Amino acid sequence: METIITKQENGVMLITLNRPHYKNAISCKMMEEFEQVITEVKNDEKIKVVVITGSANSFSSGGDLAEFHGMKTQKQVEPMLNKMGGLLQQLESLGKPTIAHIDGYALGGGAELALACDICYITPNAKLGFIQITLGLTTGWGGGIRLIQKLGRSKALSLLLTGEVISAEKIIEYGISDRIVESLEETLDFANRIDTFSLEAIKSYIQSANDISKFEEMKSLQNKEINRCSYLWESKEHEIAVEKFLSSKK
Image (cartoon, rainbow, N blue to C red):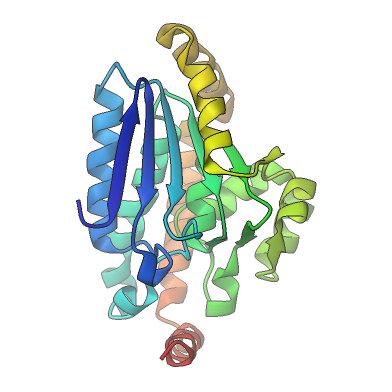
């Protein structure tokens, strides 16, 4: 694969987003490859735990704005939003524990991906922000809904409405992550502990958590979020904000 590196050790699958020159921005190609990996994990009974991280000291800077900016209308952008939104639903309902390991930036869609995982571990260098509002948008892959469900209305809206990028300490304070680790190896050690136990017992606990999460309701709420994001995609404010962002990177 071109944009993702996978490494399986015993029952632990490590998925590394690998577009280092773009801070692991999520492109259409990465979505295709991510779908392949998720299908493999779901069907392979030897795999018990999934760890997702990024290369080059970054988790993911979010959607690839340079690629997605070519989509100008709601009709053009909705398939992309539905595609990645659907993949995050698949990840969330995988039936096996998923762990996000954030070292460096998790921004926009990268923060949405991390939030779709069951567990989130971060390094002291971690930075996280739902920056979509700074681009004239809302979250478009279900991340806003997940954040509100996880943190409650007030805390979640304080992040969503400002686009604030928060440090590792604040990520813990907000309750988005439970633990600061020094390295990926520490996160993998935790995954390896889970791997020592029965897959059926692991899946049973995940199913219990899924039952509480009300996935059918989440699907409906996510579809509404996608619709709102795709509607705003056509706005002049979004076009100007993205062009300003892309110009600053040249």
